[in-house]
Image (tube, rainbow, N blue to C red; front, side, top):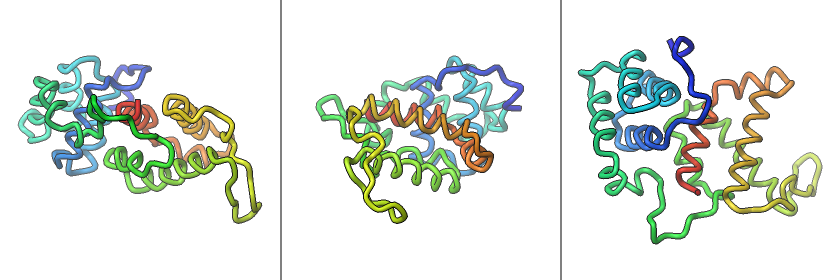
Length: 199
């Protein structure tokens, strides 16, 4: 059903990201099927109506609690953004944006949208990425190593761009085992959530 839907090439709209985060954080998406439906709907939707229609196509009917919840949020998104900045993982206007690098909160923001194996994979990828932004780190096999990105800009925009590039390269890796482990990772949505919080 997902493959039959027309695809948007870009990452989902931030409005849909907010809906997904609120649904997870407030406990409205309780089952894996509902998580998959939310992610798939966000990838194909162009507006609120197509988001709700896609949810129905992916098995979340109009009489379900999740469908009603999504419709309520989409109809009054500014209210929910004002009410739940901490739930959404957003910074307030008067707050300084946290660093994306070496920040455990970066993982907690996206873990709700991932399966357990995907959570573990992203955790390993993120800490490898962070370690390689340090001037020097200790590798158990090779000893002291210079970080791959240690001389690169450390600001959030640059780091997130590199992280997106890294995850995309893993999805296209020439090693079949590595490529298959990253294939199901919703990189577009993960990066959209991280950019929502750290940019």
